Image (cartoon, rainbow, N blue to C red; front, top):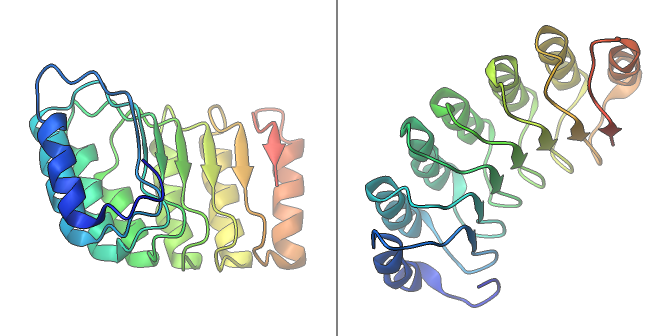
Length: 199
């Protein structure tokens, strides 16, 4: 259902189906549909009332911002959340949105895409705390954000403390500086590091 200009009113209609206990939907892709915080409210309410079979959700290129991110994060407070793949690419979140996600995170999530957001080093520090504690996250995409050496330091530290799960990390289009590059190079030399793809 990508690129359909659904808006919040369309999401509300869609959610009547998601609330149905017979709903078997596993993948929900709502990329670029002019969804805002209001749409997030009804979507989160529907998924919290009926966690269903949903394992993959894409809300990229919508106008969610930090308020929408805080609402989406409530899904992870629900022990019944089955989401394994979450794409939140280019949704205008900042470090504040990262903090909301990290504080709520307790799930089966295997893939998280936060690329093309206004995430700086303090936001990456929040995501790094999530990495330290996650037993499931395998793929993390943070391309084209505003991450510098300090953010790379936080990520490296988190991956050293919990090296056994993440296999793909995308940091394309950020500014690691010489020290950031060295930190990641050293990390890859660590025999416990499981990273197979680093961009």
